[in-house]
Image 1 (cartoon, helix red, strand yellow):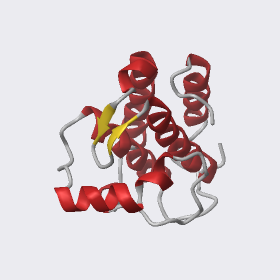
Image 2 (cartoon, helix red, strand yellow; image 1 turned 30 degrees about the horizontal axis):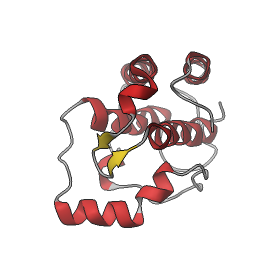
Image 3 (spheres, one colour; image 1 turned 45 degrees about the horizontal axis):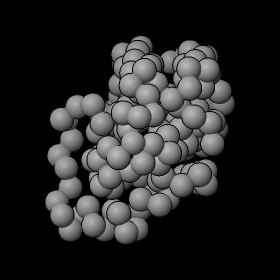
Image 4 (tube, one colour; image 1 turned 135 degrees about the vertical axis):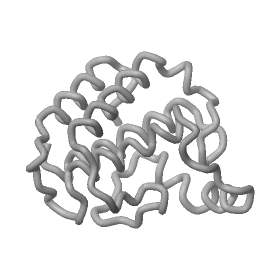
Length: 150
């Protein structure tokens, strides 16, 4: 798994994002490219903003038990997989605004670095190590950038 905390990896992800245009069509799935960018931003919103309510203790326990490993392991996501409600983007989004936000989040994450994320608590899964954070960030972006052919 590539490491989002390495500048070259972040630069590559941003280069791929910059190849997208408002007209880019998905190879699978129903989201527009702007919706996909907004969807990818949700992961970072849960880290850097207080925008999404945290799950209650029971829901968090269930997420840790049944979802966490799928999200933080190194196995790629399947096409057309189930999406958590907070990640569903139903309205149209502004392509440039969502693209800029995602690029800024990627840069911020890389600059904060691996040590910042070691033992940091996630919104839904409890404490994660830096490798789990990396896997979650990278494989989600990889999945959706591949979905849109970049």
